[in-house]
Length: 229
Image 1: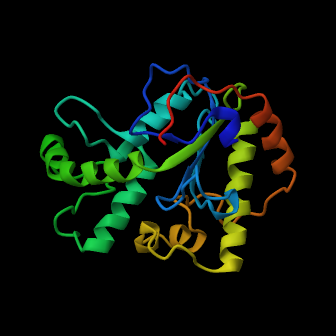
Image 2: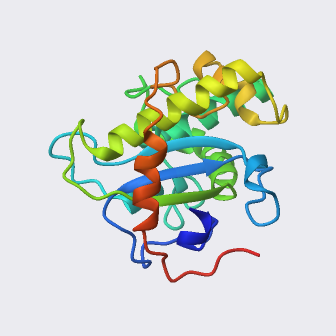
């Protein structure tokens, strides 16, 4: 996958001017994973996600990645909105637990906080910036998986089965990369699976997902971008 798409990619470098496919599946790795120098057996997946798995969804791959990346300009430049990105939500919660910031960010994760919206956003901006800094430096790969949106699409199958497959192995092998931020998460699904995922981590999986994913990788075209050295 890395060689096919000219990866790795980083959200700190990526932008919407690249010709992203409309839909696909993405794979983020831990900060310690050097996708250039390390053998692939040493890479450590940390988040698997997709887009367009709800009937009628118009969201695109880049829009989803942009939500995870956060804002690059405007009043809240460098920050983002964890209420629009479950990935950002989980990373922020782990940072709060790690540093004991519960009093500083009492509304983190509340969809409709009982406080004035602007005041909450300003209060949370520094943490949103820290979340952005973390996510933007994670190497990631992606694969073009076209098709109409819906819960039965191939993207949904690949996402759920790869999450379950990685989680099953992690649970049996035990923890590794003990510096990984996710081990501070209050979500047992996150720290037990070693993934910034909650859904599907306890599911069974179909091993044929490996062949299914391989077929889409072979038909994915690289973007015209400069990968970090």
